[in-house]
Amino acid sequence: MLARVLILLVILAVAESCIQHTDCESCTRVSTRVRFKIISCRWCPFKSTCHTEGTTYHGCGDYEVALTSQCVNATQLVIRYDSQVAEQLAKWSSLAYLNPIYYDLKSIQSAVMTQFNGRYKVVEFLLVDCEWQVLKNKRTCAAVIAKSLTENIIIIAFKGSFPPTEINGPHEIISYTDLKTFQPTGGKIMEYSKKTHDILFPCVKATLQRLLTSQPTAAVLITGHSDGGAQAQLAGARLLAEEMVSKAKLHIYTFGSPRVGDVDFAYYYDRLVGNSWRVTRREDFTPLTVSKDNYPFFHHTRREIYYHYSGVMRPSSDYEICKSNWEESGCIEWQGRLSAKSSTRNSNQYFVPDLQRYMKGMVVKGLNHLHGYMNMDCRVMPIGRSID
Image 1 (cartoon, rainbow, N blue to C red):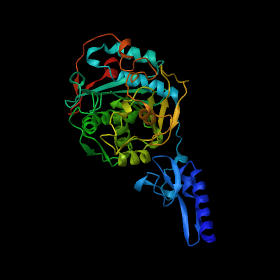
Image 2: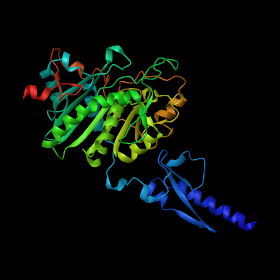
Image 3: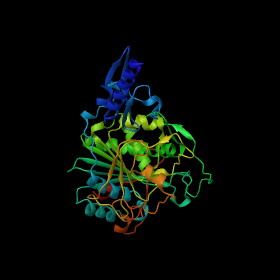
Image 4: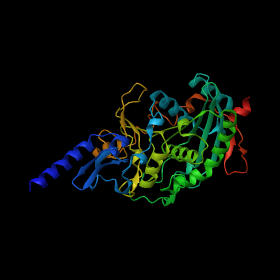
C-alpha cells in the first residue's frame, strides 16, 4: 500500500513539473522513471501547455508533441509582434479596398507617399471577378502590391470581404461552404476561400517573382482585413511551401480574420509559418463568424494579438498576446463565449477609424482601364509603371 502511495506521489510530482513548462523544448526534455516505466511530459501546440504523458483531458488528440526534435525550433527565428508595423499594415489593408478603376492613379500614389513618408510606391492592383462572393456589390477579389527600395520591403495586401457564414443568422444558407484540401499545409479550408486563393494567387505570385528579381533579399509583408486576412494566411503558407520566400523574410499580419481551416490546417500552418499575427479587438466578433456550432473542427491559427479597447487602438495601446489556439482568458474566443450577443460594430476600427474607407478618403475620383495579365483570370492596374 505504501509503495502505491509513493508511486502516486511521484506521478503527481511529474505532473506538477510538466505544468510549469511554457515552451515545447523544455517540456519534452522532462522524464522520470517510476518503477519500470518512464513517464514523460508532452507538449500541446494548440494550448501551448505542457501535460503528463497518458493524461486524457488535455484536448490535443493526436497532435501532442513527445520529442524535442518534433518541436518547431523558434530559437533560429526572431518571432516578435510590432505594433507600429501593425498600424502601417492596417493602412495597406485599407488601400486594398480601393477599386483603382474609379480613382485617379496619381492621386493614389500621392496618398501612399504621404501616408508612408515617401518610402513606398504602389506597383500594381490585381483584381478578379469572384461570382461566388456573398454580397452582389462586392464581388471583386483584389490585392495591392507595393515596394520600398529604401526599406527593402515588398507589401502584399488582400481586399477583405464577408465570409460565407451565418452573417444574418444561423439559418441562412450560403453556397461554397464545402471543405477543400489545401495542399501547401494539409488540412481543409472553406471552398469559398480556396476558390478565391486559386484564382488570385497566381497573379500575386507572378508580380512577386518579378519584384524579387530586383530585390532578392527583400522582406515580404502580407496583410488583409476580414476575409482578406484569410487570403493573406493562405498566400503566405503557399509562398513558403513553394520556397519563394524564406521563413525569416516573411511576416503576416491580419485584422479581424475569420477561422481559415480545420484542426489539421491550423496545426501545420503554425509549424510552417513563423511571424504570423492575428490582430483582433473588443466588439469585433468577425473572427468567430465561421461558427464552431456549425464547424466544431475549425481552429484559429496561433499568435493572436487581442486589444481589449473600445476605441481606435494606437501602437501604444495595451494588448494581450494569446499564444494558443484555445479559448484563452482575455482573448477573442473567450470574450465571444462571455458575450450574450456577438457584435461587429468595431470591425473596421483597426488603428484607423474606418479601415474600409480610410485610404479612399485621401484620393480623388478618376476613370481608368484595366489590362489583361499574362493570360490569367485577373486584371491588372499597373500603378507604378503608369507613372514612372
